[in-house]
Image 1: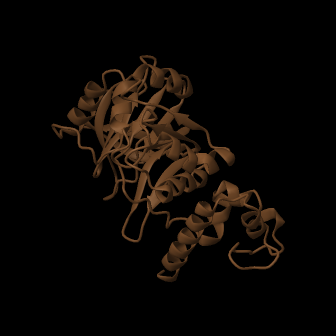
Image 2: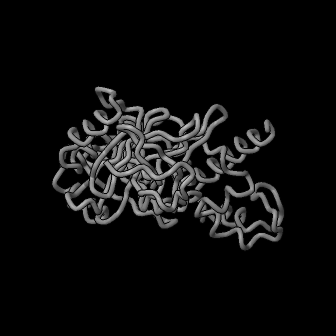
Image 3: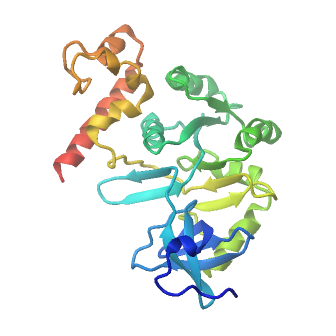
Length: 310
């Protein structure tokens, strides 16, 4: 066991590890050599999330996290009751939707807004394209293709080989977070892409001394033996709050709206009722889909209500 640096030593002198699991105040950290152990922060509340790089030192048979390294990205959601950080230092976000059951376009839009806010490249994965509902689902996603989002069409159960062939090259050398509501096929996708997924979950559960993995936690998986590519699985959600975003910033985080607001006469245009608004003109021309206008209005109302309560 390495000698413990003196209390108060500069955190830059401490070893770096990656957080691969979080449960309450405890984190599972992984050293560059692949060792996993339980660690906790100095304070009462853990500020770490899966994907964080942390400075740590040994304390008995556990570790103590002394500091969190600066994050390159962070995906979070927040409603009026609570805030949740999904993961940090993500290169790619896959937002998973399916042809059946029908997905909520509002929840998809919220996840994409959060990705834009967190500086994370996002792609949409449309699952179950073997079903008759595929054509309607494709049509609903047309506005997202038009604003530059890649829509990756897969049938995870019906065509696992085709799914792997499409997705594996995109995940190479990246840390990817898979996000989606329950019922979209996310767990099936993770089990397809991750070799020995159960064993990797077991390692984290063992370190946490929890006995079993719980689907309420975000989990880090290695996709390759060289540990260059990783997949992070997050709990399924039915609601995705974006209350951490200020209302005036919303349009800049919706790609179709952002395309046109340079044409607005007023710098503080809300794109709702002002004259000479570039976004309103684009809506009138049909360049912004009616569903997207409805989502913008819904989100603006929600964010303004949230702001008025604080």
